[in-house]
Image (cartoon, rainbow, N blue to C red; front, side, top):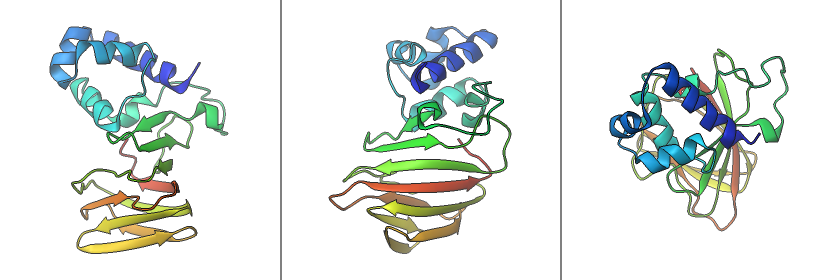
Length: 184
């Protein structure tokens, strides 16, 4: 089963457990009925924004979507097992690196294609973030500061500061982010 199929089944399971119809979920989330149906069938990889809207409509956190018992006895997460999250730009793909569970930190594999960005507007949330750039170049804005990162560089900052990132180079950037507490 692909990560998209697994995620779709988990959303359907939670939706049905909460006695919410597809039509109601579409209305509550502001997403279309057809798009949510495609997500539940594992036909599309939903954006982070879409997953947040679905989670909010179901009164759960993004992390709750990934707590199901998908190989819950394993401490090893293979690339095929990683739930994939796409940012709205479709030039950013993030994968969760930890097995499902109630953890105090959330490691993510992030690939940012040239021109990819976390969004035009900075965002904030509780906690702290650490990242190490494994490949390429990435610009990270934290508050009023602009950080130009190259492969091998790492960064650490409080997530309560407005932040965002973008790949303005011609090469894919690959980064491992660790967020605490988990916010997806």
